[in-house]
Image 1 (spheres, rainbow, N blue to C red):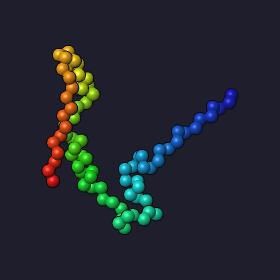
Image 2 (image 1 turned 135 degrees about the vertical axis):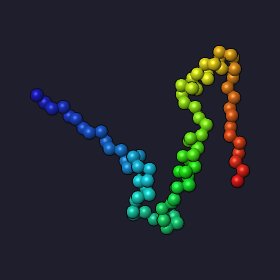
Image 3 (image 1 turned 90 degrees about the horizontal axis):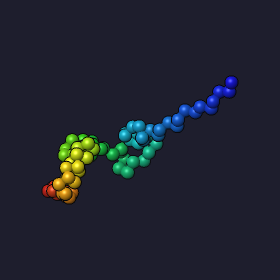
Image 4 (image 1 turned 90 degrees about the vertical axis):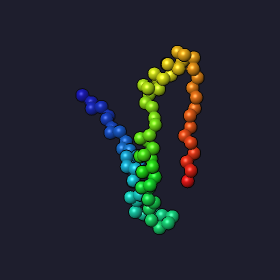
Length: 83
């Protein structure tokens, strides 16, 4: 009996599996002499993804109701923030 050629799937690169992989590189010349700090960016992202959003089943239900009454979709954008 001949064994089948089985190869392990290729491993994913570290930058796919770890969001800080690039920051851990030691042989890099950073623009300002140090690795960038993404703590503020990650905080804003975490806060924004908890905000107003729909999941797919809810969107499908809303679309069915709107179609049943002949209503059109309207795009609603968030107001510009004042900084």
